[in-house]
Structures are given as C-alpha cells and as structure tokens.
Picture 1: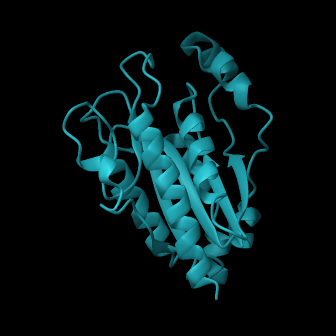
Picture 2: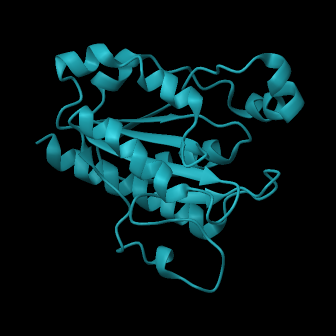
Length: 203
C-alpha cells in the first residue's frame, strides 16, 4: 500500500507538516510512504528576495513529483500553503497537468486528503482545503479529513490550526511561527487516518 504525500512549501512550514503526516502514515502496517514536492514556478530572484530559496534548501533533497506517480499510489495527501483562500499557484499548475489521469480514471476510488497553512488564524485555511477538494472530487477520489476523534482540534486554550477538513498550521505574518505540538499531532493523526482508510479501500 503506497501513500504519496505531495507538497509545496516556501518557508518550511508545510514541509514540517508533511514530514509529520508521513510519520503518522508509517504507523500503519504495510504502508509505504513517499514524499514528493511539486515543481517551483517562481524565478530564483523572487525566491531569494522572500527568503524562500534559503528555506527550501532544507528539503531540496526530496524529489519533484511526476504526474504519473499520483496514479501509482493508493492514497495521495496534498500539502499547500494558503494563497487568498485557495491552494498556491505551484500546486494548481501541477494539478492542471493531470488531465490524462482524469481521462484514464486513474485516481478514481483512491483516498485523497489535504493539509495547509496560513499566515493568520483566519487566513483561509478551511476554504483552501474545501476548494482543493473540488479537484479531488473531479478525479473521483474518496475525501478523507481530520475527524473529531482527534480531540486536539476542539481545544480553546491556545491559538491553533486544525479542522474537520484537515490539519493546518498558522505560520505568522512573516513566517516566524513554526507548527505547534498540537498542530503536528493533528498532522500525524491525519497521516495515520488516511493510511488506515486507504488500507480498507485497497482490500
């Protein structure tokens, strides 16, 4: 059973979440977990100016995903930062190249899930995941979120990401806040949950 985690990260927040999602998925017996990143589309000059080029060095060793790899997985978990309440442009461009998979029905019946990050608590985390789901539904995927059995999403004693739609983190306006322990716990839970569902679907 192959669990593919596909992400885009500019400042390292989504990468940190992706690693934790992967750790959760690996807790499920028989799960082969693979991390991939989507191609960068911004010019190097802009990446340098925003500090993203330096941040991305820490996960530059992770291979860039090919469209074909999506069809080879039993489940795909996508990670994207929020851009005005939607997925980032890099992820959108990658998904826009999956027309052949759609025509073949290559993702029909596979588990699909999403996690995200935003600069502020109400910066579009839920709308990003929900709008992402539209693409997964067009591919015929079975949506998997973050159920309330993860009790960390109901706490009120701290500012935290996480919703029934998927794990999330709050990065701060300048990217100064890395995922909290509670947010990472949600990511781990989601990874394990998706892998468990994928195992049931593949039987």
